[in-house]
Image (cartoon, rainbow, N blue to C red; front, side, top):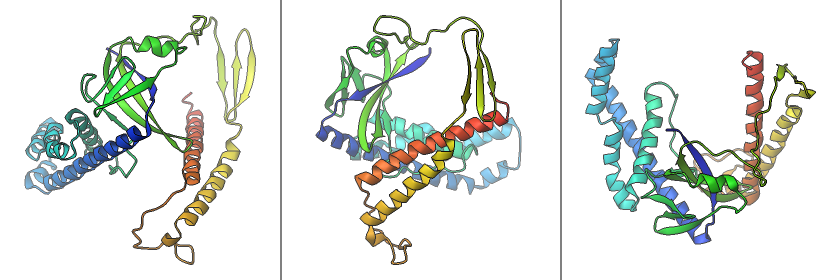
Length: 319
């Protein structure tokens, strides 16, 4: 059965946000511990004679042997679940959420093992953005507009005129995910409800369906700089990415402002000639202005990436 996601904002108090941040950091440590353990087991495995001998062969029989070697050296998802049990007990974390964190770590490491990714990284401080449970009954649960998490009850913001959300929450909830977002330099907390079925169609306040498909054919001709649209009702010629030339200059200006702000708040991290001091382990201090500029730069960089991808697709005749 298909699933879809409904994202709703949480109405959190300041003390609840502090508790959630502390819990997120503990789950970050669980992830990093799992990744460190996987690296140890993997390095131990590839140094073994049986692994190196099996690398010389090819075929399905080889893959079966590799699978047995992985089990022997505990490079499996469920062995990782057993590994995190004492860590969860020490930090007093929920086992189901911790197992999902371990599964996330194992999936990322599997891409590294099978050469689908060049590397797998540890999660830095304050960079874990989401945690989720396995089902709606334990760990993170939603009921009647309330999220229950770590002995806290947090109200969910659902507007009365939001017909889409009102109809979506009537479907069966499989599990919940708590999400952290940085918006205009401020941290906002959301809950994502993973629901069974198909998403309802969005409607206006008058009950009309939004984005309803019309009748007739539409012709589209995409060029390197423009796109032409033709139908029985209208003909348009639009420019692709008209502000693309201004994006790179905007990025440079934002980066300069960020560098000046970073140097002003961290004078002890730089030498007199402007270079970064080697071996300085003092904590970096970033102002609210720097955080806002960083968020703005990520938004502009995302727009630049989308424009590049679109340009490559046009040049390759993919559209």
